[in-house]
Image: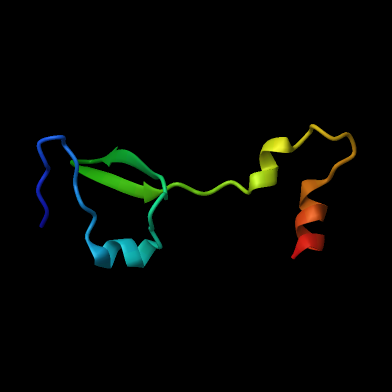
Length: 68
């Protein structure tokens, strides 16, 4: 059990952070389902994905495969 602070903040218990791999700097998304609240780890975008389409002929999928 956890309690909201005066600023409406809440601490996510360690067992849940570890279960979903949450760490400092990670973003979370909130949703409502039935009468409960859902907190979900936001998927990280690869840094070079934001440049997709900038370089003509650049295939990010092929680059990722070669980069690994």
